[in-house]
Image 1 (cartoon, helix red, strand yellow):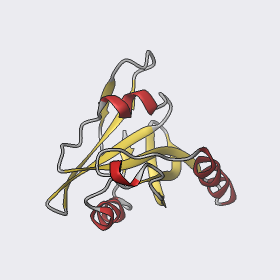
Image 2 (cartoon, rainbow, N blue to C red; image 1 turned 45 degrees about the vertical axis):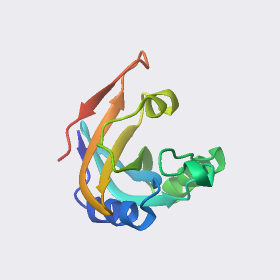
Image 3 (cartoon, rainbow, N blue to C red; image 1 turned 90 degrees about the horizontal axis):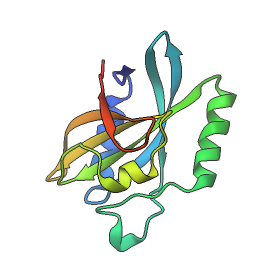
Image 4 (tube, helix red, strand yellow; image 1 turned 60 degrees about the vertical axis):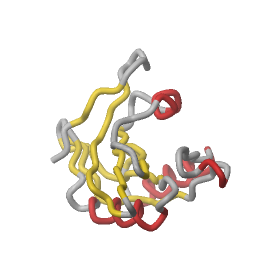
Length: 137
């Protein structure tokens, strides 16, 4: 389970600001029992090729390290990475699966006509062959 309540408005705002391109960023927070409580997001610039950003996002390794360092300074953990799907559902794509890691949560914001309409969160199965939906609180 993942608690996105305190950051959901920021997720939606970031997705709308980058529309028609995909946004991306890190999720910082703490585990509380079995619940990932997200208290902060770090928007990350989509490093993908400009002409492909409407259908693709890239997070550079240096950005992952910066997110990890920021989290450590704040006494938090990186618990996942989010992105948006402009004019598509919030279900993960094949490329999302190929670039994911089983330990993190992956919320995806669906954006239609420039307006965020939903967010769903996903966890990669240990065999890396599929995602399963994570309950959002």
